[in-house]
Length: 323
Image (cartoon, rainbow, N blue to C red; front, side, top):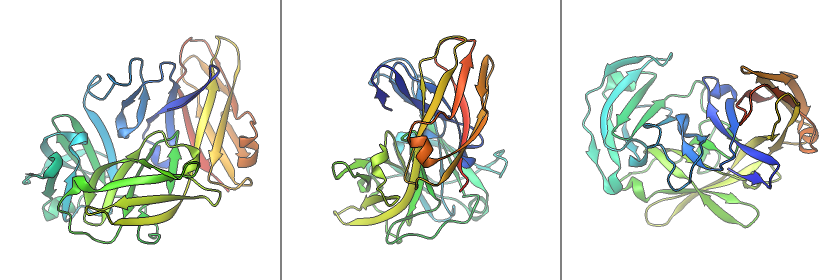
């Protein structure tokens, strides 16, 4: 999360059911602190960064995707702790049967398990642990083709500095999952910004990054990703990506305030559609706006918000590229 002096506030995000379509809910974060929330995203919360965390509001919940659920699955203990149960889910997200599996401890506290054939053929599973819940599902659409040695199973979109995606690579014999590292190059200083690997399979790694600047995407619309294997060798690729931030100033009750945005990784003539839903006590006008990237990045107003309720303003918005 970032803040621009004392006027504009970068916003934190909370995923909705429409996340796959780019829908997010977010709120101004005057405290500037962070907490892991549903989907592994960042929620605004008052308090100190050091003391904040999933533990202050219940178990952490994280969602990831793998192209298949067969074979061995390796889970980072940061996201579940000791695994206590695994249940199948259907495409509607309804819980199914409990799965009997053997969970083995690995180096660094990682856990390894394999699903029986019936469970591996399901839409997904919910992995519950002592300190977190992990949803593993299959992607709704077929994966896009891998790029070079390292690819992704879907197009990369960075929302408010947050990225949760699954990377693909040539199949490995994973003996020490805790020794794998992943990073994205920041073009401003040629240094890598490290992420967390949430879970792995022999040929995939689901990872999340927080606070990514727009400069991780170069002028050609690519980001350089590097996966370091145990022993020091790497998988590297330039992967197409784009992203956005939405900015709202401090608002006074009854006074319209402009909502602006920035988009990176797309050409100036690309068109972006914003769909807002007004919450109780709010009027957001217009509710739908289409602008080119060039217009957005020149500071054009996307919409205005007028509120009857003071304090940080949660907003619900869907952001899509339409051209």
